[in-house]
Image (cartoon, rainbow, N blue to C red):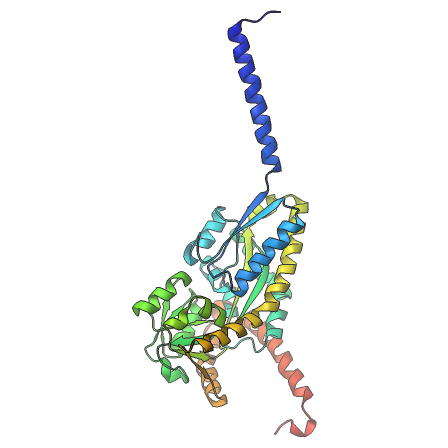
Length: 353
């Protein structure tokens, strides 16, 4: 059968189009799954280093079938935008601080903001790695989010334009906080004026005088160069800053089962790494801060520590209705276990003195 030249041209064009589509589909099938991992701190912080370790472990475990793109220092999204971007699917993975979940209606996460609630890292890890931590992460599902892990970044210090040794020193100081009602209550209990600001805005706010001081783990204080602007830092260890590594739920559940298992394994290893380096990184940052000679580092005496604790104790009672009395009590029971262990180690003759 003979075909007209015009028909032959159209037929050849159709064959070419079919072949092109086929090649394109094949190329897409071979293309790696891209996971955009956005966060707001520097790459050389505990979170930044843990994100890089996860990238390395995930890409190795999946043999290149998954590509992790990391965007630190608010390159993609700032504090107030990143959770919405995750829920919309514009980014697949985040590691926000735990205070950021309260605006989603998950006030229970503010338990981590309560002052002096974690006496030791051992108590903290029993919470984050135990049933309480799992229950908290499970609450994210209703918001279109899957919680994968908790990452540690240590206890916080206070910094300001003047020494902060006793609660009276906070009077009328404008202190930057994250969006947390607990942190607002904390600053007001100390006599300060809380100012909610995104992390990427803090340096400029300190520079311009919009705020007088802030609270951070030493690693964040150092990597954001706040020592250039804050002449005083108090090693208060009054509060905790940690993160939850989260993913868009629809994206996560849409992954091939085998890929998801490999990524979960990589996340477990990255979490062990994150929690192992947090204290070391903060210790190094504190030493680096001292070496700059620009920030005076103040250590609290036992009497001063007790004054801080007394001033902040009412915050726990004030927040019971908001966070949940049972949840706060459960964390306090874990803390009490450590107190009982320490008491048991003391010679009987010293107990009760």
